[in-house]
Amino acid sequence: MRGGMHDHAVLQPRAQAAHHRLDLGEFRHGVVPRYTGAGMSETSETDFGFTRVPVDAKKPMVRAVFDSVARRYDVMNDLMSLGVHRAWKRIYVNALRPSPGRTLLDLAGGTGDISFGWLRRGGGPALCTDINAAMLAVGRDRAAGRGFLDLGFAVADAEALPFPDRSFDTVSMAFGLRNCTDKAAVLAEARRVLRPGGRFVCLEFSRLQVAALQPLYDAWSFRVLPRLGQAVAGDADSYRYLAESIRVFPDQERLAAMMRAAGLSRVSVQNLSGGIAAIHAGWRL
Image 1 (cartoon, rainbow, N blue to C red):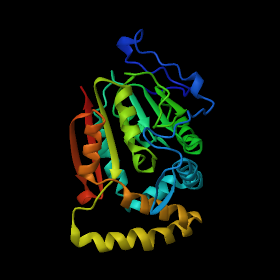
Image 2: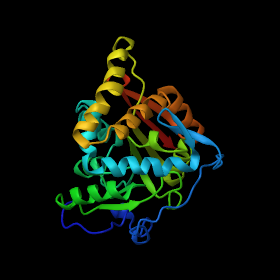
Image 3: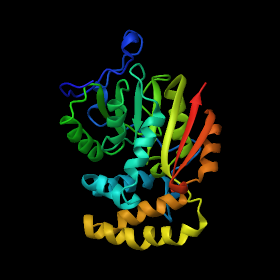
């Protein structure tokens, strides 16, 4: 639906307004719940690209990366994927199966591409969330000129979502899961906030399935991309981290297994561009 933009949206299928009202007022001030990860202590370590860092250090480090690249995030995606991410996102939004009576929670929604695509294709009310307020500010600025009435923005931690159980029909996460500290917690939270019959769908860089192209892909990721990041954004280190984060992220089969372990059913995997990226989907039954 298009019209005037407002600060928050009531997230509900229109036919069930009395049952699925969600007030976003308490989230407008950027409060992020503290969470260190199920089964993870603050003295343990996790990956930050190829570097091991304390668990409680990763979130502020990731936040700093995206603070740095926020205003050039779309350029960054063009650089990382040679522009192919735009085609991937079109395929991905179709995989979300937008429909007017279904609500969307867009995790790590950042600058809003997925939420915008959902609404353009006739999806119901959407909430774009991110742990990074700078990314959401860019998304809100972009949305203001598009007039999306059924779109809200909220700072939220995907590892500890501030929403009730069974709140959304579809949960999306595009190019965000690999930056999370406790990926198992994210998957468990996604399932928790899904209504029965709802789907979690994830778009993420994955493992190239064409071995002959691996040397070229590695050269692009580790030699060319940081230099482009320096030239375009004055920040080689953030782009180097983003390339490294792809390599340490679980491959297609491992992520599918993690989704099943989180209680999602009928998990499917669709490779894009030979496995450079992949769409994973699972149901809460």
